[in-house]
Image (cartoon, rainbow, N blue to C red):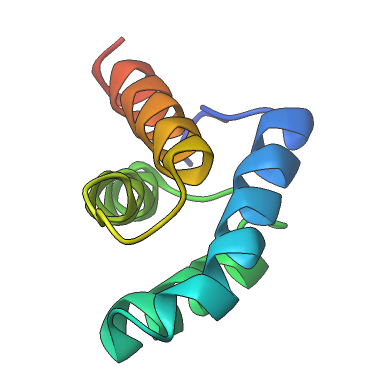
Length: 89
């Protein structure tokens, strides 16, 4: 059994961020859009570290999408860094 690395409130915030990104990502990358949609729904359950790592990399990819609003990219960057930090500690 894996320890809980992300609390419910943080998971809900990350899920909402991914949901917010879905309609915007469709114009940039269908693969990113599909992944964001999948992981936004998956964040309602506790995730194992490998899955959280996947979400962190997805958020990092979103943060580098120059055609997205800066505020969304900044939030994605923050949460990617947060998840990566939780995985290391």
